[in-house]
Image 1 (cartoon, each protein chain N blue to C red):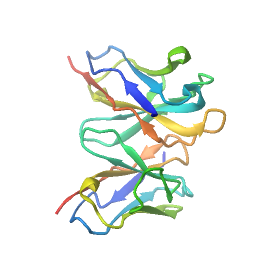
Image 2 (spheres, chains in turn orange, green; image 1 turned 45 degrees about the horizontal axis):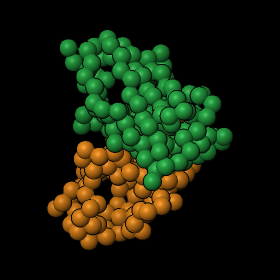
Image 3 (cartoon, chains in turn cyan, orange; image 1 turned 30 degrees about the horizontal axis):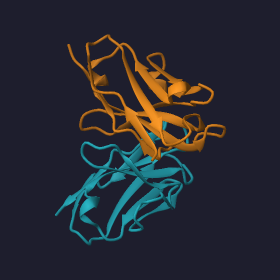
Image 4 (cartoon, helix red, strand yellow; image 1 turned 30 degrees about the vertical axis):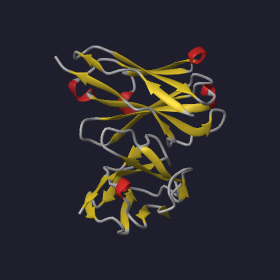
Length: 107
Length: 124
């Protein structure tokens, strides 16, 4: 199975900050990397698919980059509604695997 | 609008089975794969497998092989996930989630629409 790691595991940031979350795969997954946002008690929401494609309806302050084993999710200007946990997920091979999550909270 | 409505919370004893339903609306149910993903309390996300609602074909994560059965009823646009021989560590929120790939193509293995989740508690 492909192992996914994320860093940091948590971060504190202020509204307006630029936030970067890193995801690493245990082997090359090309661009088969997706990002989700999850708020407490809610289902995950797809933000980015195929490493850098913005899901319809997702604000443009979210962006993704990377290929191979190293990927990044960037929030260009953090908004109050962005405080949540973010998960990466590889769709290169089964079983599909998710990273452990990065919790973004208010500084 | 595209929507997945899941069945209500369940409490089961160890060794029992649970069957969770997921009713799709707002799109052609048979046109897209359906995944099942679970999340234990305070933990991350774990993929269980998918069903192709058109063909009924399934692909289960090896971890759940022999214990999980995914089925569908196309007449009511509903997918089902049944997990047997429940253990306490099966306590989790179970989500159904649509794959954006057409059912006639290879699954994309990511999820663009999610149900709200069904809480399954396994306790003696």
